[in-house]
Image (tube, rainbow, N blue to C red):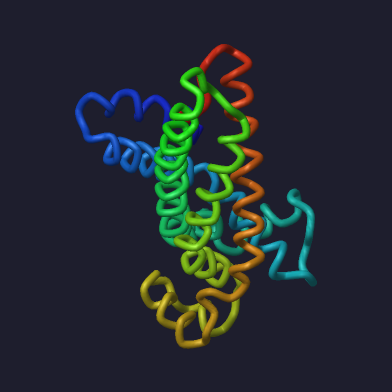
Length: 208
């Protein structure tokens, strides 16, 4: 859903907005909508991770969450998720497009026939994943803490309040190295698969 919406919006907005603005707005809107479908699964995942003594199977956790908290149990972390995912996607998609264009411009100075290149996709996806991971990590911490049931966070609902508490406890950038590894690997797999499929069907790779 996210990649489809991004591609369609990017093409639609390209004629009415500057290139950078079209990339940013397309990626932000695509992520905003996709997160509505993502957040229930994110909530279930975090509940299972942070409650090791509770049920661990999807068919057990979801009814228990629904019974105890209703829909809020699944959508209570939507705003923190937006705060994480929208900047992450905006940075990842926009930086990917700009870095890929830069690399292709360098390649074409060496070889005028340089076209789609999966190697460029891999290098660019690593850089884009790194930038996106750094920008979004504080909000990722808040998403996890808001679902964790920890006393300091359980009774708080405002994102800025949770942010201040996490900052006070020194948690905002805890685990950044591991998350950068995860985000970069996901970025490589997503973009490489995505561009490989595009190239298979005769389209150029992203940014080329």
